[in-house]
Amino acid sequence: MDFTVEYYVSAAGRSPVQEFLDALKTSDPDDFAAVLAGLAKLRDRRHHREPLSKALGGGLCELRHVGRLNTRVLWFFMKGRRIVAVHGIRNKGQAIPARDLETARERMRDWLERTDR
Image (cartoon, rainbow, N blue to C red; front, side, top):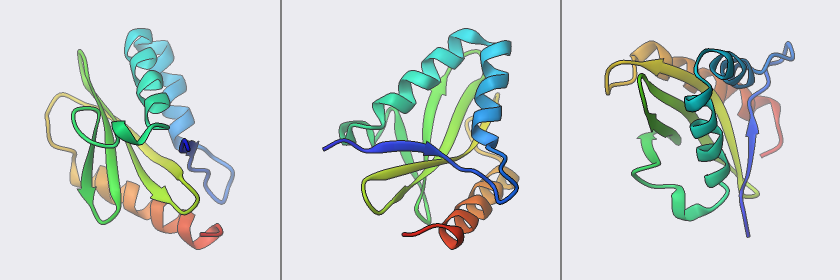
C-alpha cells in the first residue's frame, strides 16, 4: 500500500509548500522537476531513508535534492499512511537553519492540532 503526500495548509488557507514549489518552478525548472519526482517517490516507503530522505528528529524528516542550491522539503508522517509536507527551503550549506526547523515544527504542531490524527 502506498503513502499519500499532501501539503500543509494554514488556518488562513495558505499552502507554503505549494508556494515554495511554484516559485521554484519559475526560478529553477530542473530542480523543481527533481523535487516533484522526489515527492512522488515518497509514496513508496523504500524511499523514506537516505539518500532521498532523512529523519531530523521529533517526527520531522527531510526530502533532499542537491543541485546548484540544496533544496529540501520538510515533512512528517500521519496516521493512515499519510505524509504532510510543511516547509521548503533552498540553501548553499548542508545544515538546515534553526529558524527553518522551528517553522517546520510549528506548522507540524498546528496541523496536528487542527486535523484528525
